[in-house]
Image (spheres, rainbow, N blue to C red):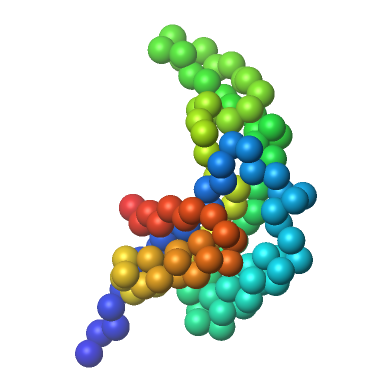
Length: 118
């Protein structure tokens, strides 16, 4: 019997605009995140993980209809939330990805988006 092919998912932590890392990412939160990372590695589902620096460090490259490129400071869109970090997971189903997303949301104390890759 052939094994079911695994799918890759993007699991992103979203933070509100006013989120203060220095006040809200405590040692307890970091310990929880590390435990989830260790569990993902042990389960063989984690492909990549990355925390992002402040959105103020972002650069956006805009392409005009003419093809001209320009660079601006800050994220692409002005929104009330931003992506703070993410995982790439390889799992058997969307349901499994959502379960990992729930663990990530609990550990990071934030909202999580789970989205499949093409």
